[in-house]
Structure formats: C-alpha cells, structure tokens
Image 1 (cartoon, rainbow over the protein chains, first blue to last red):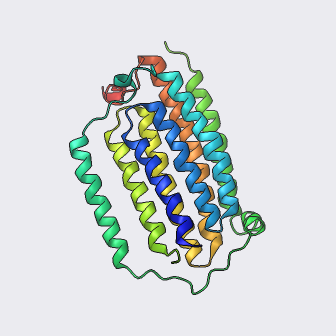
Image 2: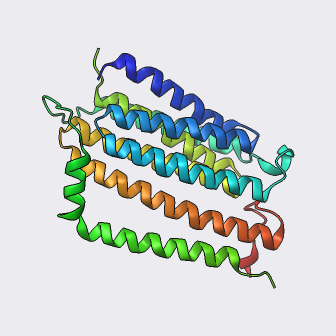
Length: 163
Length: 102
C-alpha cells in the first residue's frame, strides 16, 4: 500500500477526531465521530482486513453512532452549548496530552519493529469464518453470552421507573 | 515511498491521545463515551496494523472483531445508564452525578 493513499486518510481521521475532541457542540462531535470511524474502516480495508472493515461499518457506524446520537438528543438541550459540552481542566489536560503524544511518538520512532519481508494481501472472510468456529470457538461463545447480558441489562436499566 | 508500521502506529498514537484528552476534559457523559470509543478504535488500528506487517493476519483481525463487539456492548450499557441518570436528575454532568457518594 502506498503512502500517498494513507496520508489523506490519516489526515482526514486526525482532523475529524480533533473536531470530536475540541468542538463545543456535542452534535458536531457526534457527527465528526462518523469521520473517525469511517476513516478507520477504510484503513482496515487497505490493511487487508476486509471483514473487519465491513464489521466496523455495520457495528460502529450503523449501530454505536446512531445510539450515541439518540443519547445526545434524548438527554440534553442541543442548542445550549453551556449545558451540552462544558470543557474543563483544559490547562491540566493539554500538557498531559502533549507529553503523552511526544512520548509515544518518540518511542515508536526509535524502535526497529519486526516486520515480515513480504506482505501478501488476501481475502480474510473465509479464514476468519473457519477460525471463529475452530480455535476461537470459546471466546466466540463467551462474547455472544456477554452481548445477550448487555442487551438485557441495558433494557432493564432504562425501563426501571424512578421512584 | 511505501507505508511502514511507524506510520500506522503514529496515527493510532495521535488518535489515542486525542481520545484521552476528550475523556479528561469533558463533563458530559456522552462526550466521555465518545472519547472511549476513539481510544478503542485506536487500539483496533494498532492490532490490524501489527498483524498486517507481520503477514499473519488472523489473530489481530479476530481480536479487533472482538474489540468492536465489546465496544458495542459497552456503548449500549453506558448509554442506558446515562439515560437513566438523566431521567432521575435531569443532568448528565458527571460531576453532579453524586448519587452513590453517600
């Protein structure tokens, strides 16, 4: 994969994530989150993870983002910025942000990562299907039970009447 | 110019720091949840990137799939709690949600 394809996607993702983090309006943040998630789906597709890319689109963009938008619109007065998105502790968080960013970037520049000589891209749908029902069967079943529990729990929490 | 693992890791590090900044500064519970989603997404990019450059696609991609499913479960439960808190006290400011403080 060439760098000229990667850099526009990366810039798009970084800009929309900046909007998520620094915007004063929660609706703008929620819609900018779409850019981040969609960009990472494209990136997964380019990194030969086609199945993960489609799952990302379906679950993150189609599910979680809609859920977040519903939560935003159900809970707050959208027009009132003071209520929707107060931002606090910026003068403490910004140094932490830059220190951590600088630390991580200098860490990964200095390391010689072990990399395979040649990467052969291939479709991953069939291998993932086989792996999920063979060696990863136990985590697959556990996560389905977890999803069931989360679903029932979410419904129970929301439906309980306030006394 | 070809893509190297450093580029992918740098992108994921930047996304992680932005998400952490979001979590640190927001008071709105839904905003904090968005930051958590960004952090989880950055971790997923790291997994896929590592498995791609090792030319061993399967483990990283399966872990990323599980990560996506866990993020979905977490978002559902967290947003349910947020809506329940809002129904009770008409605010989702996390500094005012002191019901369990005693």
